[in-house]
Image 1: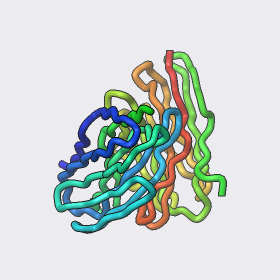
Image 2: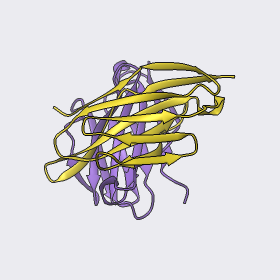
Image 3: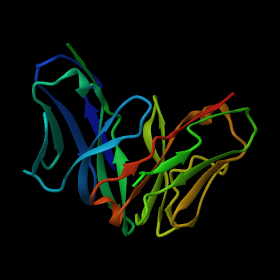
Image 4: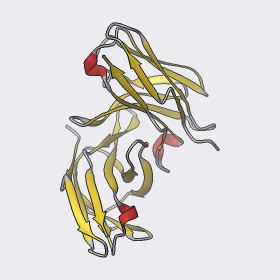
Length: 112
Length: 114
């Protein structure tokens, strides 16, 4: 069964304190791994897509990496505005079509 | 582009009533997805369409749920009759070519069934 597990469930950081979020997955026919940011009361906002092991993507203070079994979202010198829930999703190929399966998310709180 | 548009933003209804949620995808996107989000279960895929055709509805929890996409610019998710356990935030998302460039989500409809 296709599965996505994120850890930790919640993370509290001080402003400037770098850390990493983990996303491990088991899926047959992986077509891509996605990272999303979700703010309270809003829909998930697309951040990155990773397709192959060794690939890295960066956006401002965020950097996503991918191995064959997991992905990391590294947050460097975070600011309070980085506080949000970060969702990982894998795109699995099944029955001739792709579908996106989400993890439960990591709630990040960055305090000044 | 205005993005994916969902309506209503909030819906409060009594148990047993019919509820219809609406979605307008991004113009030109050929995939449309309906997700449900709860604290307990996170984001769950309910159903998705490709070129207006339902592809996989295995996530639809019960026969009380139905979804349609009569044309490329409109989709509905209907719950009849509604139950308190249906209370959740329902998201619609659309994508181009199966999501190679990411899915774009709407702002969601928060449904409360009392």
